[in-house]
Length: 360
Image 1 (cartoon, one colour):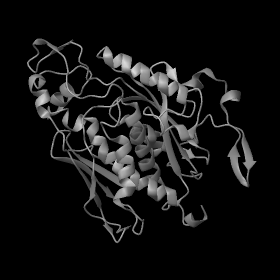
Image 2: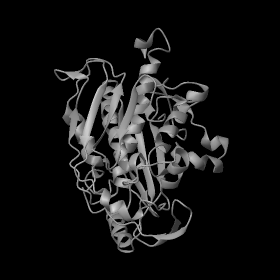
Image 3: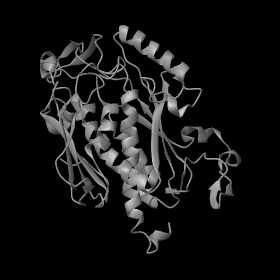
Image 4: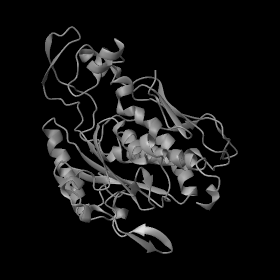
């Protein structure tokens, strides 16, 4: 089926279903000689893992990674890197009673409309469990980017109407919300607890940035870097909106307020502000890349809702089982992975754009 692969030169293909035997990915196009161990990938998989706190699904999966190909003696071979994670706590029986009902907010109906057949066990490929392959591939991309001095960092910026007011980078991994504001993180956790008690869920905003990105990455016209980032982010389950830089706030600004004046900074051309989020004309300008993504509340709620069955007959549905009350903390490593994948791909593409690429 088309649509399972992402990228041109640094290419990721994910595979597997939520309640199938395993999930994983294949990374193709990674240059040979890059130091890579399973532990390098496992760190980010552990951050994405279910069951890690009371603000995530109670499904218990160790998400233990196996690298099946593409490395030898601790370095990449330049051949496809195949990675696998076994599903050890799948419980498809949780879906027996609703397998013929369309869950509101889920892709059940649209997958049936497209294929006429679907895996009803937890949503199959439409499940967030598919993002294991994205995070694994993104971890490899991060290692490649680090060699070029590029770092990707994400955090929970907002849950419902609670927005971080302080940015303490060290705080992000100290709390279960991955929020850089310790006081607001505690408020977020309390709100999740209250909403979970109401059998409901919450959405919010994750921010992800890339630092150390050189000027010149990206392609003109249709493959603009911001266009590729937006495509990458909107492909993540639950994401419904993407902003680059100031995003929709530019609609309220004047040109004199929105333009980023150029300056000479530490011997290189830069800008004194960063309303553009590090990208002009689809090409990086050397400033931080700034991306925000809006995630909807998880659709699986235990409240009774109105729906129809596959024949169109009216029915009521209550989705029980193990589901996230909010996707935000686990969305952070997924968003980081997708930004890293885009940048790794364009870093390699840039080496083909000019003969003196070593000068960059």
